[in-house]
Image (cartoon, rainbow, N blue to C red; front, side):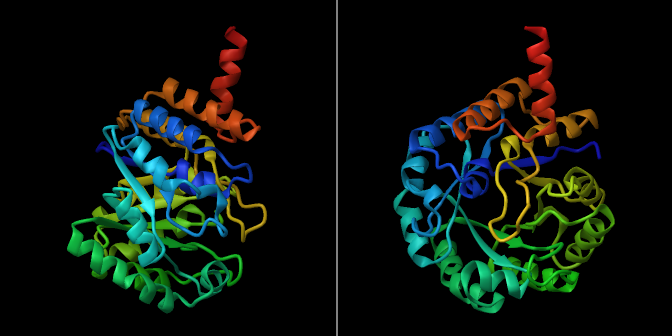
Length: 301
């Protein structure tokens, strides 16, 4: 447990796209700048998707261009070739594609089967490989689905292996509705790790039932060393009523630092970034650590 863990900050994309209040391009650029300054060099900044389907991600090209002068690795989500072309016009160096481990979620989310969704982005992966663009693969509903209920680990293994074989350098396993528990998380990481090296896996856990940190710890025990998180616990899932956002970056950093694992993150600057975006959304951060530190600051003032 003493080795370094890499954090992928997904707040500006996966977090904000599920928040009801849209944030301007200028404010999203400023948010990314604060996250980079806080010591989070890998940030997912936008998505090249239909503005009708996801209006919160309008202007992602402008956001990507607006942060291109910063030292960091910036990821964008692309669903198809049209999105890929737009991402390349904006200068994207790292893209992400996504599939579900459950048929019910795939049909509700993108109106096609899991197999059909993979066929849709095969041309994207081929073009990215030819262009020298890194591709990250997301798998949603790895520990449960709002439509299908339990998801068999083998279903996740099958999708993960397919994405890896198609050229994704990293597979991010998402507990989209936050229903997982540590034993199930450990079993899943062990199962997927049998087909895809643990060094090429990431954990993307939501905190609906307060299990995300425990699940991350269980996955770390299986050798996974990449964690997706969102400042302030931003996000949710439109298809899962009551599902809260991603595990909060502050909570992850607090846990890791308390374990003696250096993250390189400045908690004060991260807290400031979290508070700024929470103010724009008109609500306090849901992060336990942010709430505790803000209360501590208020007492001291």
